[in-house]
Image (cartoon, rainbow, N blue to C red; front, side, top):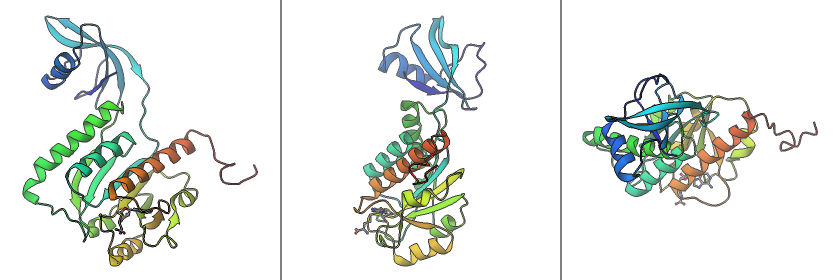
Length: 256
Ligand code: SAH
């Protein structure tokens, strides 16, 4: 069922007005008819099942509230900026997999040059991609894509656990799953991914000094967007499993 984000807080007893873009999508693209059902999410992240009504004008009438599917922890991803379509793909897939915030990283070997003049236009487009992905996978929260940041800004960003995916020190980098087992109860993670050409070693050192743990995502070298998608998937799967109470005692090799 298609989901749409509504501005404000929905009062289930009141008709909900839909904007022009939403109505166009429902009536022209999906060819919906009166009484077809949709899912609406308000700014308090409440999810509502509603039906489409045409009574002089189109609106939605609430049927009932639905459970939320949001992730168990807050994941802030900071991937080095990569080119065009692959960046868009990263935004879409990481949103489906449960990322909460994305800030591009201006790493030394980034091929993409960030132009401040294009900021508004780019952020608007990127946030539209993530919003559509959230609607498609029925999340009731939105992903916030922020302005790209420098390594210094990244070092000052707070989170319960800070990770940098670092392939070159595979022997030094701890396997991500083994590290996560040491942090079962955290609420937020900041995860950094390097550019196509990888990190300069001084960049990785600076991150480590700022409290980032180097993690390996396995033995194979992944493309930057694959590494981003992979780390978000590992984080959301792992903490969904932990927090659902399926405690991994067996998985940790603990006999009890
Ligand atoms: N330096 C590499 C390519 C970098 S891959 C080369 O040989 O060309 C781009 C980014 O993806 C890396 O900077 C790292 O953050 C991440 N990455 C890729 N594979 C990884 C792995 N196996 N473990 C951890 N991070 C990985």
